[in-house]
Length: 324
Image (cartoon, rainbow, N blue to C red; front, side, top):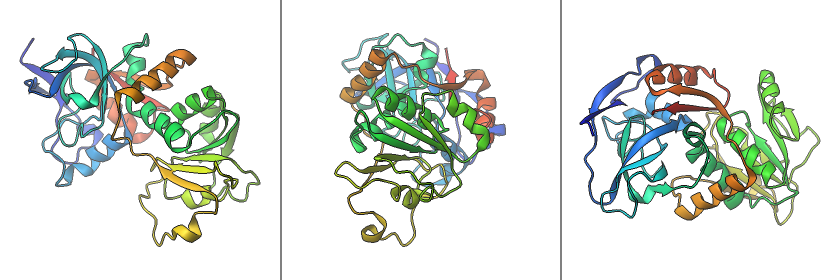
């Protein structure tokens, strides 16, 4: 194995136009960590936030290689139970913030956030799954307790997480209503298995429909409005997962008055994956023959252009980077 690799290393706010791969030492293995040869990874909103502004925060390791997820093969198993060449995914647990992440050819990762997988999907298809499908699965299964026949609202559905949630929810037998605030995004939703599409003008409570459950991806900006269209029942849930609206908290939030009676408000935080959950997700994907929705695939050498397109919103769906 060579001594250096290509990686994106940042230590200050970095516009997409300034993204540049550089030579960087391949990490040396240590106890409790494994070296992963990265085959592909997806771009995520949280990495965009890190690159553009959060990198200045004192809790971010600097310099740092961004990237909260990847798929690849074990290059050095260290003292773990993994085997060299084993197919794995990795996500969260501090990747790309507390320690170097996946915008590189290799990553040294803590064994407790690396998971073996069984799949016949291509590396590029696998690159669209880790964080996105883990978050969608957790939101639908753990937080919404989605059941066959449920009428589900996905608010802010034209993002990578929204497309993943649509595919999983439909495979679970739910009736899915999807919203977008951009009229030109409606044709994209029409290509999915979604049952109903609503153009979101910021208020749904007066549109004369009700749902059993809702996945809130716009965030605090529309959360109170979303809760008002839930039919009260013992299984009425709203899961706050996304922050696409750019509002991160609610001012003067009054839980007693703002959460409707008989409606449960939950939230999904994706920092704690487990092998069991990853197994459940891939068993379901394999059984239902789900193909992840990919917006565009870029070669690793074209990471700069991928970031430019991410910042400009030019890609509809998950951006996947093919490393090898």
